Length: 454
Image (cartoon, rainbow, N blue to C red):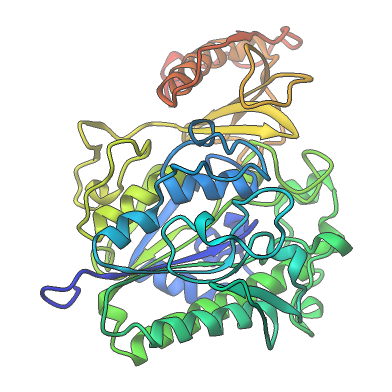
């Protein structure tokens, strides 16, 4: 519990492009994340956590504002937050918190790769960041910019440089409640060399290790990149442990909420020609753990939780009002065993938008994944979509068998189409036409009516 009379501190430990199955909590056998696994088991592990936008900038806009990317207008990279956007930093600052941002921002325009102007920091007072960190830094060359737009070059491997800065911030704010957002670039690829550069020696340690079934089946670039990617994940977990060690050494561990999550996953060029921008689980499912006051001993949350639910959760956990415009729901009632989101039952599906590389939408339940695509459209929305895929995640958790054309599964597809249309409308989108896929296969076991709603 936080100290009497003091609101809890809040730290967001935000990684970039990290698959859910890099963690021991999700069965990865490589022992990459012992610190996260330990904290997840003793605090609150969101076992089914998904981004609502598998693209860097749009995902960040959702996490900062609690609004869908189609609501803010940040539906693809390089679209800045609108000037009137209200972020988590505004909410915490208004409640008397010191607010800090360290790392990758990616919410300013295309031409701003380095400093972010003061009037585009949206409520963050302490500032050490780069708009697009992958273009101003490399694995052993970390360059960010302070609140006066001065270039700051930090020593060490980039994960460590960012973590050192975060620990310095925490150490200097012991006497006041603070909200700190730490945004790493790892385990995102380094764009200019199309590689995943880990700390020296780490690539060799993990090359040839466990390969997720979708990557083993579909190929892509996994065999080239997975060793480096795993090495980056390992160093991130070590950094996460260091943050918790710092909080404990300063006697702040019982007063500080820490959220670990990521903006999206990575499919290693198996679903399209790059690493994300797809509504498959490899691109949308991420690791998420809450620790600290309100989350200790919370156990494993089994409900489907979206990135859009994390901003109201942080505010609710800190005892602050959740702004009415936010489109997600706090998970705190789930921890109290209520199974509800405000005045309604917790949603049985998560809704995903993608408007870069393709204009698509998807809904996912525990059992089914249904996705649609608007061919040749590259915009926030389309008036007409085609059915693209249907997966039975119970039998096919890595989405290797597309059932969208199966006559036996038409009842499921039709039910999921209605779920998708409802969620699009709830997100503020105009309801489009969805064109059913041609039936191309017959003779499979027909789905029982009871299975349609799972």
